[in-house]
Length: 86
Image (cartoon, rainbow, N blue to C red; front, side, top):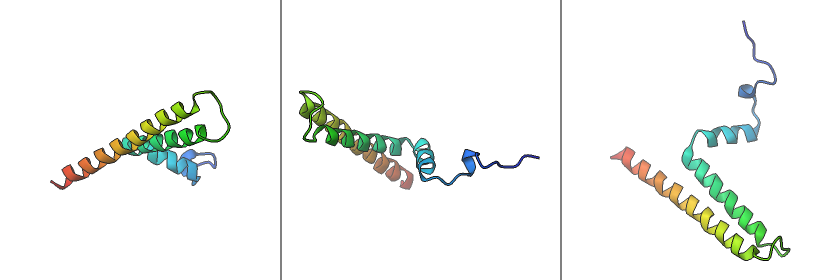
């Protein structure tokens, strides 16, 4: 007879674990999360201090990739929802 131990990750209620479990189960939510992460990194590159001499270019590239990931995942979600209803 097995009992659940306190270190069993399936029994925990940690918020980070729950978020990662949700993201693992959904490709579209993962794409949105990656897009948001790219946008945040792009904002970091736009801060007043410089990491490299091309910070503005890197921030622009990351911003375009982040917005593209969010828009494409949102579009696929809308299409999937539309296909389910029809």
